[in-house]
Length: 324
Ligand SMILES: Cc1ncc(COP(=O)(O)O)c(C=O)c1O
Image (cartoon, rainbow, N blue to C red; front, side, top):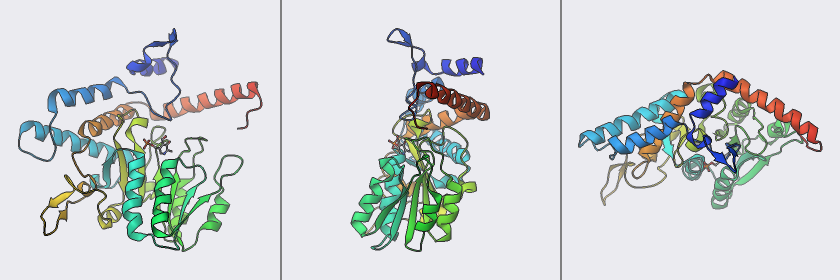
């Protein structure tokens, strides 16, 4: 594996440099990942050869840009095993994906007296949009407690579920603890009381294949830049029937079907949620990142990561005083 790892490392130009007189060691992938050459090339090729606005169809470059942009959506559909490409909405990242759901599904369905559950290990991007929604509606935000071991207290979660709970928004992998939450069980339990579930997959999608249909997630959110793709692009997956019933998020541009002072009609999915000119290069770059990952042996990568974790634990034990 060491040779394969060195070959993979060589595909990331930013890692091929010395910092402070030593080969760069980059351990901040939870915050953002470095980009392989193929992603950088995809961005550069788009701007060098195909730069144009999408869905205008007026000339060759626009046709090409549209084709690559929509192919990128299909790549992400396959990556998540979503049922349809229309269920893949481009956003700026995880934060915007969660805000979109809170501002649309949330404002449409949440009322005073309702409860929204998150976990005690959420990133603030999966707390504050729900806090804002609760302030606007009179609903209550309740955190599911985390045990001393860093795992979610599933018994406490079960006891918090009632018909007051309308939405559960949980992190798949905690950015602070590394805990992998049992989201399949969480989704099943939440559905039993009629609640919808969003999974924050920002830290999950780079580690293994996520299947949104197998999970039965209502919404799944992640960012491109933590998945070896560009910044400023991310995905909101949503079940078609839910997205169709939701009002638009922002107004203008791509989300319009017909605009007049007498009233405006909205575009079909997924464009209804993609106001303005989208991040075309970003979507194409993110698809290149997914293609890059698909070209690697992801099971072997998972084994390598596990071996690194075992080694890190051994070394932490030698330091002492570290609670794991
Ligand atoms: C679990 C989790 N959720 C959400 C976010 C926010 O992601 P972004 O800043 O790309 O929107 C992060 C970023 O660190 C994260 O780790």
